[in-house]
Image 1: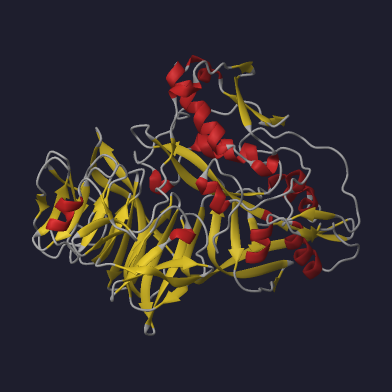
Image 2: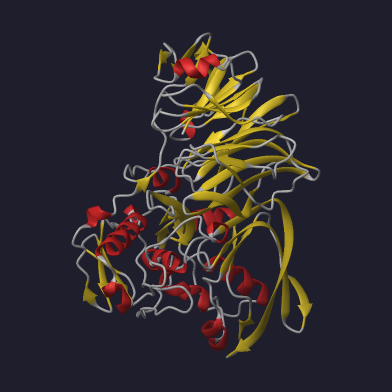
Length: 564
């Protein structure tokens, strides 16, 4: 389900962050970073703390005297839902040696079904978990379409007559409910290679005051694997962490390695923008970031040198072609390029953000349309699907029967083949470039079932040349029809099964939303958020997602167009 919060500065945060109250905890870092020690004992009693979704949950207790191995194990799993003081309560269930070596931040395995440990003898348990989702040490969430089993091993020994866990894997095992209650999703931000936009990369961290340190550590480590290779850039590349982040009077003080002090004014402005955007953590009261280098304050003389923002769609009415008119419904007021678009009698249209260029699929192929000249055929191959257009003006097109034959055609007409690892024998249903031009969304039909994938766009001197690693989203086995970008870090897919069509949202780095069904849908278009998704049916009826269901808009059209 898509979640929202009241942060208007970052539209991604509006969708992703659940309001969370702060749990008092000691600051800590990822493995390998400096940690701030904590002091004070654990209060034994029915304490309460806030869960990640704002709910009140019981704080876990420490080990009960003379508890069996089974009870120690079950209570340890419960205690591991609390990250307070570097998982202080959970560590009470471990021997001193195991406590010192156990790294709970290494990973999270999300359990989808109830599971019980099996006593395999020699004071050892085998714990088999049905899972399809996990989070790595840097907060990157991964999910598969189906469950698989993973077996973890735990060993026990007695300490002063009491059972304690002496051997265990690093990381956490949490039920789906426990994960959603104790973790929040946070977008961290990188730049497109040309430094025009901020690009979100969603991460998951346990709620509490460790979040700023986890965010900074993730930023310094760089983007998720699927965005590696040049799809995005970071002003923090090569810089290391200094002292742990501290938060005072709504200001997060971020200490970086001494080499940050030699950064030029433009780079320092970008660093400030990247940190301020990523550390906009309302649940922790952070509204500003102060930067130091090895303890010495860094003055960002001109932060306006870096004014990148997240690329979002315009919140406009449906963009349609109806009869001999092209424009925004319901009155279909003409745009400067409306007549050229209508003259092509096309079947699909995508308009750029500035409304000054369009890509149109017509009988002879894909055309580029601009106000100053007649439509120009840029790809005349047969069997092309609906095109896309990126912020640099490249028109993207591909034949439906050869998903590996993607072309990006520049405004000068030069055709650039896009290399990728997409199977050439798969059928491509839709291709949509993100509004910031850094990623592409592709919906495939393959011999082993549908694939909904996103990939980073690799550019050389601004020219798109290839796609990075393919990131598969956990799409269902239903027949693919179309897909679209919802917002900068969410996509949606339209598919058909059992005689009806359904739309499902997929956060890139999160769990899919609930499917909403309709009838006769053939094309899906995104706008600013989940509630502004629109579709058109085979009869030309426009529908919009409202109150969890699809409702007719008082309008019909021959084409529902996309505006970037």
